[in-house]
Each structure stands twice: as C-alpha cells, then as structure tokens.
Image (tube, rainbow, N blue to C red; front, top):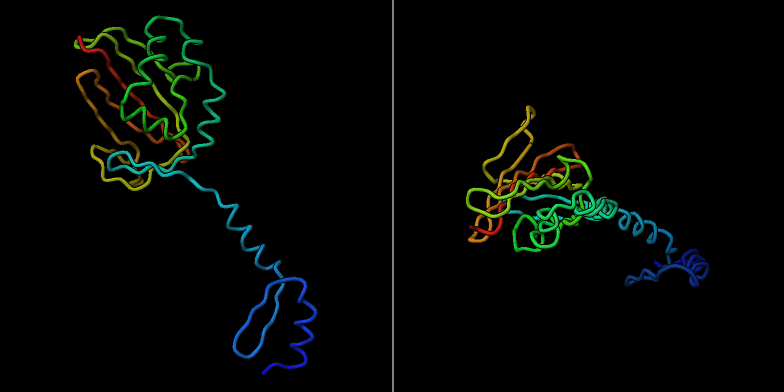
Length: 195
C-alpha cells in the first residue's frame, strides 16, 4: 500500500532519477545506480574474431595496427627489385593469407627491419618467377580449431596450425605459431608468377 513515507521519497527524488511504477504506487530511484552498471560494461576489452578455415583466432586489431604503423616500409629495409615487387604487387593479390592478415590489422607493406621478422626474397623458384618467405606478427591468440595438421605443446594447448593455398598464378603455404599468450606468428612461403 502507498504510504506517507513513500510519498516523501517520491517528492524528494521527483526531479532526479527514474520512476518505477506498479499497480500500487510509483517510486523514483536515482540514476547513479544505472550509470555505474553501464560504465562497467563499456570498459570491457573486446577482441575481433577471425575465422581461417576451421581455425578461430581472437585478435587485438588496434594493437596490431599500431605496431605496424610504427614499422618501416619493406623497401626502406631493402631496395632490391624483388622486395619492391612484393611491397607494390604481391601484397595486393587475392591470397587468403594476405586478406586475413589485413582483416587483423596488419599493414602488409610494413615490416620490422630485421630478419627473420620481415620479408625475404629468394628469387625465382622451380615453377615460379619470384619466391618470398617471411613472418607477420599479430597480437592474437588461438580460439577453438579443428584444423589439421596442428601441433600441441606439452600442456596439450594448440601451438601451431598449417595452411596451404594454390592457384594458377601463386602458391602459398603458411604456419600460424603461438609465440606467447598474446602473440601469433604467421610464417609464410609464397611463390608468384608461374613460369
């Protein structure tokens, strides 16, 4: 039943807060409680989920992008014709590895200036005019995967997963390797321009 005490509470808070009503009476409550619970939700750290075949990866896209923004262009580190071709042409091809790396925040034209952390050209190969090997570091971790082949560490946790993709104008194989709880290394071999 609506009492005099309820009326006093209602008048005290009628200019601040929210109104709760039911079939017996109305009551206002301060908004402070509501805003505290909303601020907790908005500060949660969100990670982007990327699916590569049967392998899910949780990526810190902004952290990865910021890392690559601070790296030099590949051609700053090496001015050879093959590295220039990689930076200006190969990274723009429709290769699943490169498309997924871009979605994770990697700027493919930028690399750390020390190998094996960057791209290395190997010249022509048996079937292709140009071959490259290299690594791309991503701030991420493995989610669930059913992809084979895979390796696990001594604790039974996923350590690496292997992929291959081949088309007429390229051949690409890569392994995603866990290097820490927050970092994955994409180690790749790509050949382009079939002879």
